[in-house]
Length: 354
Image 1: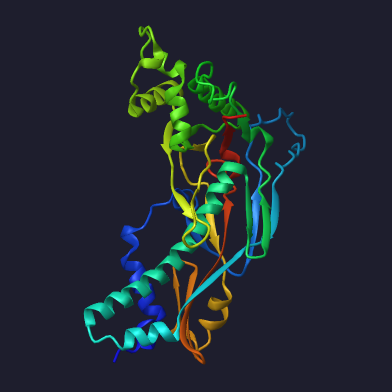
Image 2: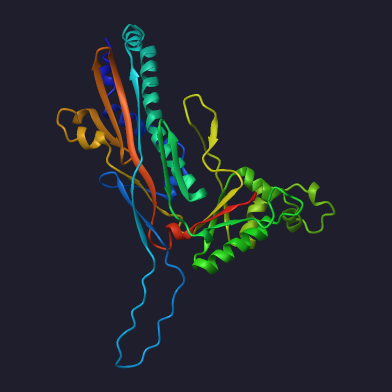
């Protein structure tokens, strides 16, 4: 007889999840904000940037050195958000699996159970990606759901927000490539940071591709720019040559609920420019109650595992009504780095439809 209590364990769930990592979506946020484990649930967010280099002040011999004012650096202490969901194997499902005489069919059912649990862990990853993409596209993180309403404002400099000279949706008069060149040039003058990448959706990229100014730049002798067939690679090469910026299209989606509609992780009509290094900070992972209390308790330690650096997986046997529940939880929040090569002072957010 199949004993689900021996099969659905945190160790097996973690093993099954690790085996599936190669098939999972590679999220942009994982590269921009590598996961970092911190103790507790409070995060010190550092705001501020290095600014322009300031020339050393002239001085006479045998005089005291002039004290320079330090740059304004603000440390904000924030309580990180907590995410937790569970799934259970109820009495009915357990009876159905136990009574199966065909091992192949039983294994299919059990595999589906692990897939469901995997989806909880993947859901934790999607929650982190959603925060990362909202941060780089708005400068804020808003969480609204299940009675929780939280807003984290990262207080970016107002010069880190810009807009197109003419809406890119106006293909006849907009000049997206010139806009990109002007935006990155102005940002370099303001912050002395060279921007290397431009993150946007395919829909936003198509606005660049369909602009008459782009088509004329590619085919200057064409009598009718609208009728010219343009290949995306041509446009990306043109942008790179004209501005030094490499376009990265990002179209990953997520659902807010099981069976729900697809929502984009990165919005249309927004372009976020990133520096050459590509790392902006860290996705800080705090200590969940399951990790803090259960993993250190000998009675429950075998029922708890940590995956993805800070995602806690806990299985619990409930005697009445008989079921096994699997709980997945995390405490996470993206944080910019304090140095100028990454961090808050090195991104530019452009709205191209305002």
